[in-house]
Length: 234
Image (cartoon, rainbow, N blue to C red; front, top):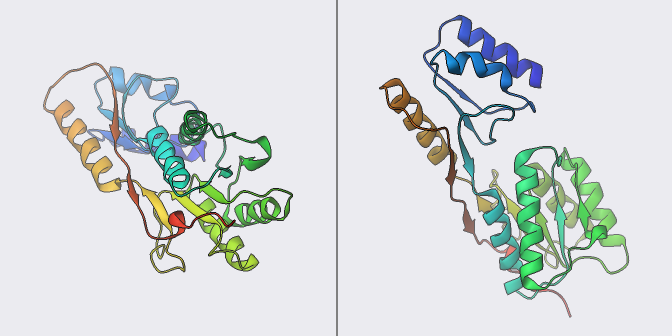
């Protein structure tokens, strides 16, 4: 809710907060220009700001998506579907770009009928996966670019009885991913590392350090648990 983002930020600035760490939701953070100019340290996490120059701490979204696709290809998959969030979200765009670049590098075709965007819930993802697998020439593997999408995809695979035949690598870990059957392979973000980096930037600014605003990228890690290592059926 972009308006709630603004309301909360304004509430803290009116209370004279020394600094702000923000996970932005809106597509315009230029309303913070005056606060930054006045000397309030502001750091954005998870997504970079738009319409404003400020420090940000983000996951390595594009590289992580590339790694996920390469992992599936290493296990024999050539038809790898992409299921993603809203394309106007920077993280979703970066993960989709990583998927496309990996397909291009590997000589795989990023098929339009195997690419689905704007999935905002687990139910929407489950519906999309069901349609994909019931179509002609379905994918043998799925790259799901957000944890709610991963949950919906796994739910659909279990409902269709193909959870042990269709490979899945999801971006971002989620609770109980290691208890499902098969356990879900993920590209895990490092929220503690992102928070620590953001805090460090804030305190350095408060201590009087100056530097040009920059984007700080935190690596993601592949956790292979089983679902991403399933080979394609003959």
